Length: 260
Image (tube, rainbow, N blue to C red; front, side):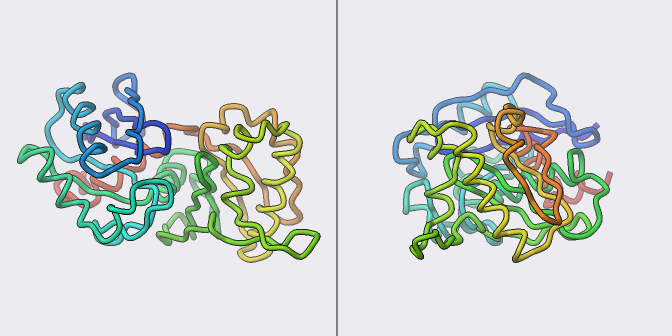
């Protein structure tokens, strides 16, 4: 059995657990610690170090990041410190955690997409699938026949309102906006529906997989999602998809793990 530690950096919490790569199951109860105020690199590294030590883990570590990641470099930072921009985060994390660890980062929504395609709601689905994560922000993962097109960042699209003004999708329809503005599930579901309708127009996906913490309460808002051509379902792995996908990605970067 191959086991990799997956870590999911979120806007409010950082979660981790060891993952069985053969089944996608967490092999221990996940641990969650608060995301440090400002999410500065050194502070985030300290929290991840605490999580690694909690599981007494040595080896390959996969970490999600809420922004663009290319070849281990973090190139945007929507909900974390701007000091991440341009950083070789793979090297920073590997050095910070020590020689017993080999660290690989990827975008958080992309991690969820990988997990849902392998073990979750998008398993075996052909054609275009869009995984949308609704949390502090809005993340997106674009899949075609199960293969990931990374770093789509579709939460930063702008939607035209009825008055003709442009709305930033993430700032209008994220789960955090629902909480901050005390929106009803019906009102918020309508906003999410408007956003998904725009994505449907642009990409014509076979399936939307809707993830993030709100996927655990999909019965409260999913009835308000009404699309013309696409199906919409909650993420099967719910809020654990990022952890699982991070572990999967890190294993792919370590051939001795990825080959088995």
